[in-house]
Length: 302
Image 1 (tube, helix red, strand yellow):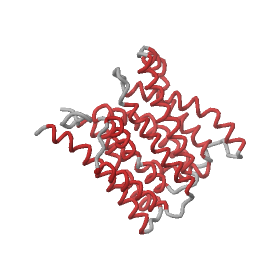
Image 2 (image 1 turned 90 degrees about the vertical axis):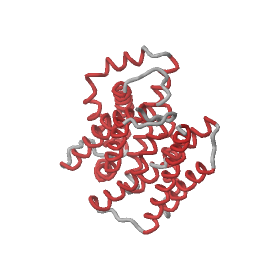
Image 3 (image 1 turned 45 degrees about the vertical axis):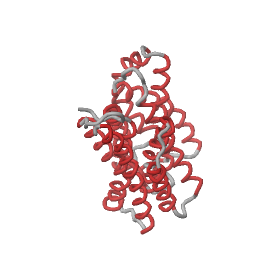
Image 4 (image 1 turned 135 degrees about the vertical axis):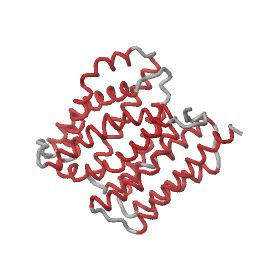
């Protein structure tokens, strides 16, 4: 049986994919942050995207032809979804890592499920106090966690999370079936083409273009470019198609917790008590959202 936004049951394949996504996303920001700071955000973005694009290069022609065969409205939604997810959101994440600790970016970005749930509630006209409390708890946790950080940068990352929610919802509304491998290949193609002009921007800002300045940087490039690129987004689209966009997004409530633990234990970052409390509020908000999404499905089986 499958677990979608409208039906009861569990799609184990999709749920497993979502868990794998959480594990990768929990560690990728901490893994990449030092390399981003050493190489510069735009240089890192170009070379990591190049690494990911090379892995899907043999499938570009087939995937592009599949997209061209879709109906016009469906094709437009697909292209918007993969461009938002793979180019806009990913580029802003890399930029944020140049200025914020990985745990801060994680906590800010993973308010996305609250935004996705709120957007679906507006679309379906199904508001509830639980949904309002979930969103309020998550955003309060963000404000508590960020504390004295520059408000402008924090607002930019939160807006990026809202943009990611739009991309997630669009990914589930393609109408005609579109294979996750096709979505990921077209996403990497667009991301790579959009990253080429960043080399000029990197040079203008004095960033060092050669990326081979140490084994750690090379590993970070391939971790972010390949594992956190086509691999994780392929799994993400499997999760969205099997679970529905809101439930798939709700799985990511574990990312700030796992990511904070990884950042502290493996990468030497530290958390103050208010940051831990902020993460707790974010997770509470996500848990309330998950409970609110599950309730209608449970009620439908009675």
